[in-house]
Length: 221
Image 1 (cartoon, rainbow, N blue to C red):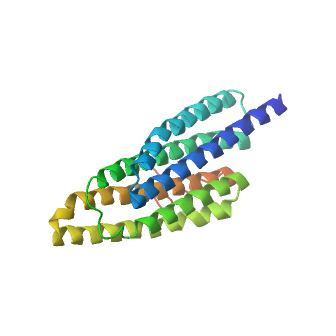
Image 2: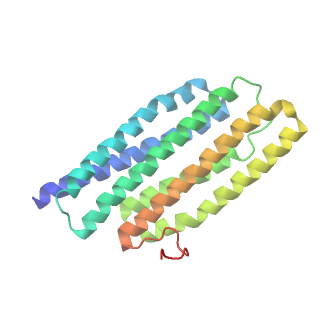
Image 3: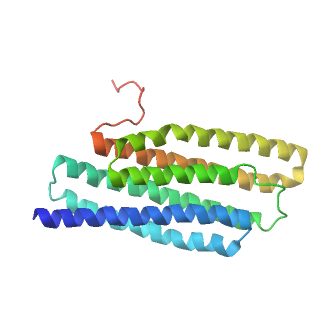
């Protein structure tokens, strides 16, 4: 029975990592579609979102069956964390789809003079995602903790891009629709970093049974 349970747990972890790979690829391709003005790549990202959604449902189904088998506390944490991570990965896939849609709309208008720091922002958010998933694989709480403060760097880039795009819209009203599309893309990347942070926090909980979300907030009365 224990061996069967471990096998099923292994399938959950394997599915989660595959889902993570799909989500990471979707974001990278969506941003590349913006840079290359590649509608076909953007459409590929939108089509692939169904796969990510299906993985979330499959992982939830497998996890619920495992929960019914009354696992040990450590296994229970792994199963519940897997469900939360899959939820964050599904939302990352949604953000990739948003970027892809905006990419297609951007391609109907003349190219802006530059992409501001969107590629750099994407690189940082994806690095956070990769490191948080790697921390999950290796049950490395220290690596997970190192991901969390990096979210501020991505937040700062998002604010910087917002300010620069506002200035461009004031200077050149003809760019307003394109700037708004880039603002949405930047916000989606900021959310990808947020989800990577959520995953890292779940890894800390998995490793240490310590919930570090909302640290510093007062307890409920």
